Image (cartoon, rainbow, N blue to C red; front, side, top):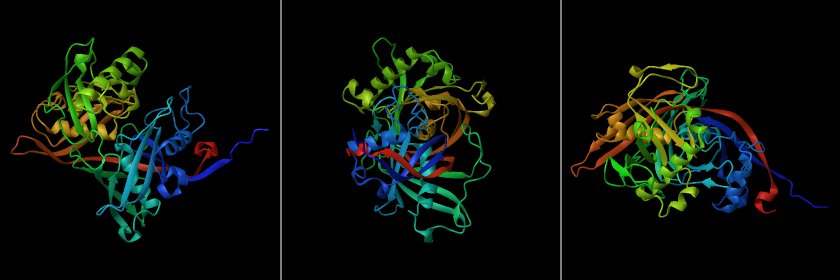
Length: 402
């Protein structure tokens, strides 16, 4: 009779952050073999989320069969001066055995401060009885600092509230986020460093079989490729069904993304793009227009500065990735980028854009240096977060080679 390893029981917390959900772990709670980066850690997280699933459903795990819900986070007390918690993010593939560590998740960034407080990773003396707790987060994937302002009531994280976020059905308490120096190269950054890797605010994307496409390549929040909706045959008002149900369109976007990654210097060969699904992101922009969001809410052109649609892990996102929102805010603040031009041009400190689920405002502080280069000190946005479940996840011990 074949003997199988018993299931492992691992402490975990399941949270929503912004318009994403993920499974959060304390580093020290992971099985010893998974406390270090590598194949065993990846195998463990894949099994937790239920991947790879050839049916694309993640039925045998905690993933919910979308890029927004197939995510894992590892937290630990920070040993870095001036920081409270180290935050490591893994984007888990759904039908492929892939965990992409190349970027951050801006949405789940909103859940890091509240979760760190809940898990006891923040010195209790730092938590007020009421007011706001400031949590300085080291984003370990890309070597950046994020400052989360977490509301506190009675010494505990205040999760309920009246802050509405398009893409989330219910209101909650707002967590204000500051992404510091989002365009500066950080320790361990992959593809970070130069704000405009080509040196231009608008460049040309060259792809076989396509006309040359104006593009803004930017490293801010997350490496992102911005294109004009009109150049692609779109209006910028599309919802998920218009693109995610079109296999030819998705293949085209992946080809554009791969060639853009090559021009940005993120990969050295086109074949590498398949193993780097999380970055760069690809998005298209358009001037404001009326449209109906996925919730049925009518968005008027006068309510927004521009339209943005973005793809993540090969699918049009149902709202907007938090890190892509940072890229939008930064690009909007710099005259001449495609994002800035779609918003009407000129210099601005904030922008409200329309996405498939509604609207979102994001700000950025930008200043042009004497050299002509742009310095981005911070990007700002409001998100919310909530613990959905806590306890233990169970995974077959075979994932650790037992």
